[in-house]
Image (cartoon, rainbow, N blue to C red; front, top):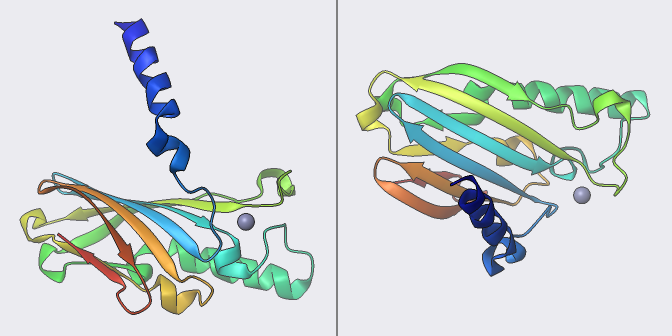
Length: 168
Ligand SMILES: [Zn+2]
């Protein structure tokens, strides 16, 4: 059983889909939205460039302030994500990774912000959309690729400054 699982995993890694999966694209971000019972999870991966315009540790005071402001914005889940109002969701937890653990730049010169947002919804049956303000907060961001897994099924969508919502 264990071997079969490992082979399956290797096959998934080698599949054309996995190889074609776009990596880090400046101006774009990825969201995985999942709904499980009363829990709404939004996992985000965003190139740091989309927030700051650079992907190395801040050097000047101006850059340090911009970085701190970006992190503050990204930690404010209630501000950047609005689930369907009728679902009565509240922020349960937020985790935003430090793009530079130990203060060091990445060897390849790129850096991502990974963040996990968890909401708990009093009326999860009414949850059928999420709207984001990320495009207003970060003008360099132009597109968010969304994958969702909800009780209604799975799907893909894109958010843009003109269409900053997904619904299902
Ligand atoms: Zn980059």
